[in-house]
Length: 195
Ligand SMILES: CC(=O)SCCNC(=O)CCNC(=O)[C@H](O)C(C)(C)COP(=O)(O)OP(=O)(O)OC[C@H]1O[C@@H](n2cnc3c(N)ncnc32)[C@H](O)[C@@H]1OP(=O)(O)O
Image (tube, rainbow, N blue to C red; front, top):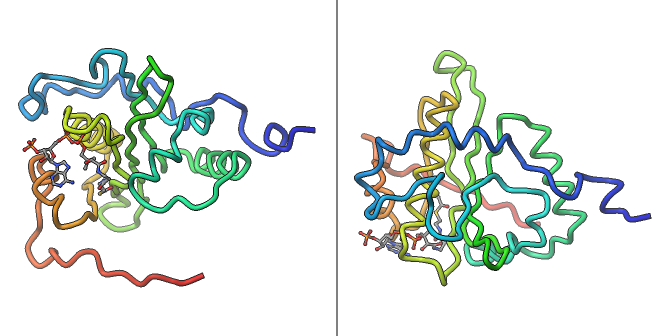
């Protein structure tokens, strides 16, 4: 018995409905991308889409390894986490960029949607785990995927989207309309729990 197939997700399913990305209106952000690119037209051989369960075999973890420490995650563990995320419908939106000439994931970013009681039972968006393969950087793909996440957050109905990043990336995010708010710039206080 193959433990991967029997305990977790089917081999090839999206984390969320791919059609939601087609509804995003990039016209309001076109001035930030020159030449203009969008989800529907990201560039030759590139595809912007949800994470699929099959992306384990398309290098998603190797890509995330260019962002932070991934550790040992085998396919069964990956699919269990994928299934758990998918069950939390409306919470996890991992968006990837695939280079279809090599069948590899070359970009990724995550929108996490937090359900709150405050703000009229509002939804808060969190931008997480933005990474572009280092061979593909400097071609606006980072901007494209961040804009995609922001438009998606707005489309879903989030009242705001926030992120934490290294200081050197502040100008990158400021160029995409992220801003410090009064008395809130120290927004990344942390406790790390050792294992
Ligand atoms: C919320 C988070 O997840 S924060 C974590 C961000 N991710 C990382 O740090 C992982 C490693 N870095 C990367 O994957 C990429 O460098 C990204 C995602 C930050 C940027 O992706 P790219 O595709 O190269 O960016 P893109 O081509 O769209 O934009 C380039 C612009 O960002 C700026 N930029 C990109 N990377 C950096 C950097 N490391 N430091 C400072 N500025 C940067 C460039 O100067 C350029 O500015 P310009 O448009 O004024 O010339």
